[in-house]
Image (cartoon, rainbow, N blue to C red; front, side, top):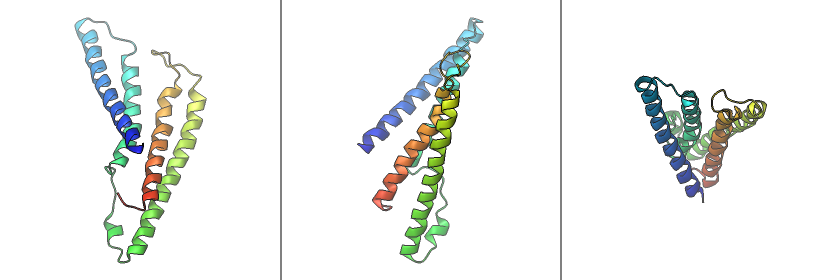
Length: 151
């Protein structure tokens, strides 16, 4: 089930990137060829790129593509102490992500009643990307913790 969720996330990220590329090309064509700028173009691509960034961060974490400094941990001579440091690090990340979900939900709730200028959608849609990304990353970290560091 977890693999299916990650595949769905990757598919949505890819679709958003493709849609952003198409939107930018259409925006350029309308602006410079037809002299008719699209009022919603920049807002749409901005919203999609924010979602790609935060949900994409979860996808990168799931594949182990986030930056990590493992040199210090690798130099710990005791395997048990090394594992304690790894688990402690993951718990710290989990705590940060929990704060991200909480704060992101607060911001999303405050901005949901506001409308975006061009698309006329709730402004909270833009801010919702952060807690969703943090929640997805939390699930990934919890999965790593439940596996005991075995990938």
